[in-house]
Length: 186
Ligand code: ADP
Image (cartoon, rainbow, N blue to C red; front, top):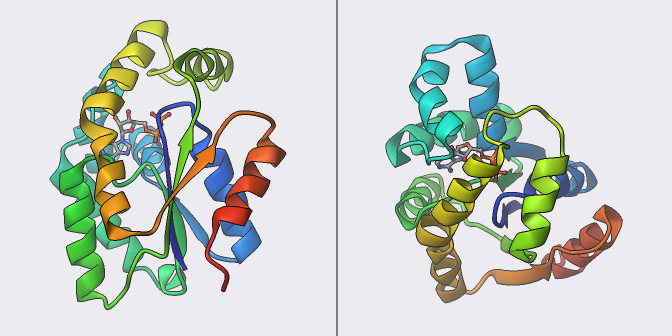
């Protein structure tokens, strides 16, 4: 199964994607996490993406799409994956579809987590992971970027018919149960 966990910054995508992936026995793919690892390791990719991430801006589409393509070519991704943080623009969604088409694969579910802005801001400010983009100013930029560039991705998947909207408020366990109920039955 290939599942996308979608939502604004602070919606809990990463936490939930990991739990769902473990539950299904497939891998978790987080573009944001891969970028942060590349930055920490000082790789060429890390150097390219660092300034975008630090500013709360999006990494250029082609860079992200190339990284996803290379990642899912790995053997452990062949049985499926739960992906979070991607696609984050309609251009990425289109490129992802083309990529999957070439591999004879489809997206099985698109889970959209939603929560009020005030709650998202509170969660990001209090998560204390020391991320360079978790300051008040950068959080505001990320939420603006989400509304302008990322939210339209929802319409793209609504048209494609695998869209599920899930309430992202409450406890981690409550949200997790809602997501499991929203997944297609295998
Ligand atoms: P959050 O959703 O809380 O912002 P992520 O870890 O998903 O956290 O993303 C952190 C940052 O990594 C983003 O602000 C952006 O700079 C970069 N990034 C991650 N995924 C993408 C993507 N698909 N396209 C462009 N930039 C991305």
